[in-house]
Image (cartoon, rainbow, N blue to C red; front, side, top):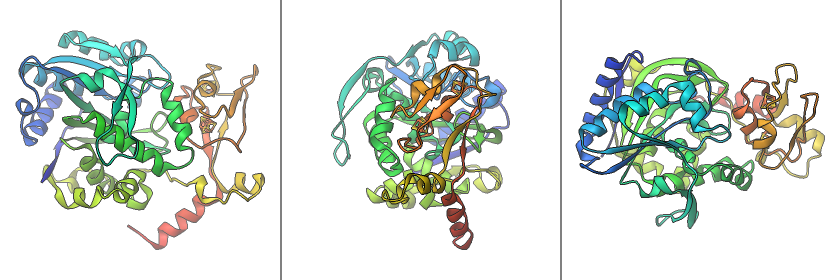
Length: 382
Ligand code: SF4
Ligand code: SF4
């Protein structure tokens, strides 16, 4: 039986976080079960962008510190690392305080930059994946995601956080490969997760993000930490508690198709605090639609109006060029006037431009499909 531990944690006060992390890890068997003296332990937080901590984009350093102290106590040697899509670990860690925490723990703080080819385990969709060397060669990987909404994948928690082990620009190639097919992208996430095999996942949900996540949503106080040795079990257990209809959660659909979800559902045991008193009922999820649902023979005009599409506000734009740099199919061009020209016919709706924009200058104009999905949901409540 896979355990998913939920532990209340009201804020990022160091003592409160240390106590909640200690309790969550103990409920999963104790750190000594995962880390032996002398082992190299990779802590993989979410370091998406150099946003101030209050925007709740990145895993809070207080959680990394508390987990790191338990690892040190168990005799492990710590590395903290990630590969942000567009920013640098050095800059992000200065802004959000991770650099100071790494120094306090005596940990190496690294940017993933050494991709190696790894064979995936049996039952994977992809036979081999290029992933960060440290994530594959560390003795132990501890996954430290942040609970956020995700405009493409609905939610980002334990499984999605490991997409950070895909090094730099290769992320765009995978977005391009999956195109508008979210289930295919979820398959990739499942294969990455099964290849990296984190020993333990500890989710920072003290403050999370709702609405237009994972970079431009609204901070949301949730007040808990979750932990499990199985990130998929954790994600599938938490998603419905956050109001996610299973059919709208691509990770769930991919896991069901591969025969991974049913066993997880029946083999998962929630331990610790009662989720009903812990998780707010009004958590705001983004509405997903799939451009795949629109037949390709429809004309560009109809297609454009049925599906949501990225729209940029040149007044808010700072001219950083990150949106154009990250766009996998090269559908977005930035003019000198700071106006973005977007080819909505080749755009694959990956939401990367919205995700990396530091000025919240890109949003998705809702297409008619969203209205249809909303109406269907109203008559088929979860
Ligand atoms: S314009 Fe934005 S949503 Fe469309 S493909 Fe480019 S990055 Fe993705
Ligand atoms: S729209 Fe956003 S990401 Fe693109 S150039 Fe402007 S500020 Fe940068």
